[in-house]
Image (cartoon, rainbow over all chains, first blue to last red; front, side, top):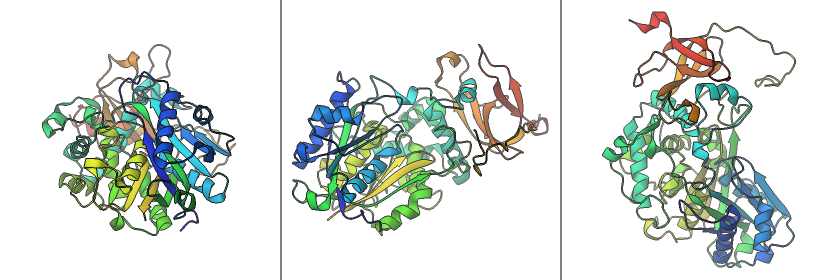
Length: 384
Length: 101
């Protein structure tokens, strides 16, 4: 095990309401989510000296601006990474390293965006060095890039569109139990197949739901967390991978095996870092900007054999009563796209037994992933 | 790329003409036009094509059915001038011997 694993924690997770038009600035959203995390933890803002975040296409605010709005004093740790959903798990692990080494006492990690009323990542044409070539063929949308991976996954494993649909349907069942979720009406197979293709094989219901909102978590040491209000969620394992990066994100010319995502590459280090295995896990919160990503991640992490994830979901194993509840908040698909920071929060709430109607009974070990293609990160979180 | 992504060496890169022949590794059918200027072109097929030279290229796939299984389909490149000042569009079409008609 890496030294900081087992000795660092998430003390609390906080959030704003998720909406389609917040009427608030991103700075305001970020500040509210951070205040919520601090308040739930019962922490003193004066004890927090680090803050980090990530953004895409300039859709957020610098962490230091949020620190100012929170009335934080001198900062000893900051981080602002301009990348997407690869970041939440990694930023938590990075904050854990900072508090473990003594560089910071406590660190807020947040993601805030007006993702529906402001800059809409999913509809934005990407920028980058080689994009001129992709512009001319109309290959610039993230749903297209991710559908390219899903198609190859389907070719190699025999997974069908019904398998994709099963993910969307299963997660909507959780969203129906989640008052924060933006899409709460149950989804049927017929409705799924009646929805239009965006970039086949992906239909509208395979794609995340863009929202305005923010989520934040407070990372500190296990020792400090014992003085706080909530049961500490221990950071027991973590890993990052970048494999076959191109000159720009989404290029993927050098990522040879598109039928697998980053989870296949980081799994050995993730499980090794925590001294745990897939069979130990009670609940999995898997980054799901698109349905296929859930199937690839279930297999990449070793929860299912190659090509078995579709049946695993169809057979109900990922439901609340199943052997491995997955994306218990409804995921980015149905709760909303807070870029995977809400995926971390949900794991925290599950392990603090505060997930309400969607609580997985006795959940003690959770895995969280962040990312969708050739790069990403993951956490193993445990409760005492 | 200023240098080779496989070994990191710079100054040893050179242009190599491709035969333009390859096989479709994966593909998507674009229905939603992410580029407003291409909204009259949807639906269209975008393919990831593994060229005989060992590199992967992305291009439009012409002359195929939108719902066909294109996996491993042999194709050949056909450069097409870009619209309105854009770079040329890389287009692949089925290789004559594979079109089967």
